[in-house]
Length: 232
Image (cartoon, rainbow, N blue to C red; front, side):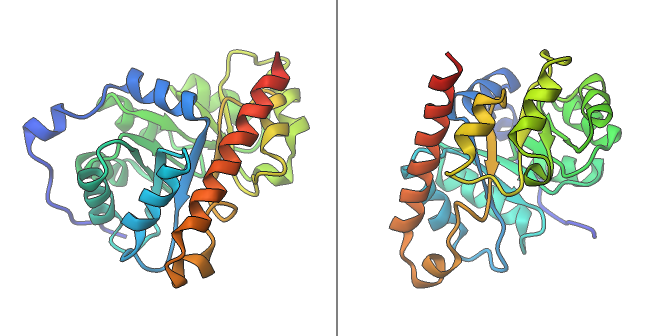
C-alpha cells in the first residue's frame, strides 16, 4: 500500500514535540487510545471526546481510510493532544506518518528498519512483540516501549513474568485491554496500556453520542490510576 501526502512545512516539523516530552506525556497519561474505523469523517470528534475524558494520547491506525490526512487534521485542530500512527509495518509508512504530524510510531510486529526510521527523526517508537525473545530483541533494537500484542492471549501474568528478568524494559499491553483488566496489567508492571474497541463504541459514534466515549476514556484513566496505586 502506498500513501501519498503533502509533507508539512519545515518550520512546522521543528515545532513538533521532542521525543522526551512525548515519552513523558505518554507515561503520564497511561492510556493510548487507538482510532481505527471504516470512515475518517468523524475521527476529529472522536479524538476530542476521548481527550475530554483524559485520554490525550491518540493513535491513528494506518488502516483507517485517509490515515495521513486524519493525522494532519487532528494535529492541526487539537494541538493539546499527542498524535501517533499505529499499524505501521515498514519504514516508508513511518516516515510518511511522521511528516504528516505523528509524534510516535506503533507497530503490531517487530521491524528493525521501522525502529531506525523513527529514531532517525527522533520519534518515540513502540514495536510489537509476543515472546520474551521478541521483547528483548525489540528493546535492543531501540524501542522506547515494547507493545505486548495481543495482550489478552497472554494476560497480566505474562507482563510480570517478563519484567522479572527484564525489569529495564518498558511494556505496553495492547489487544483486549479494557477497564476491567487495565489495573491488573498496570499492577503487573506495564507502563501504559493501548486501548481500541473498549474505548470506541461504534454505535455511539454512528449516533454522534460522543459522551459515551468520554466516559469510557475517564473509566480507563481511573483504572490505570488504581493500578498504579496498587504498585505502591
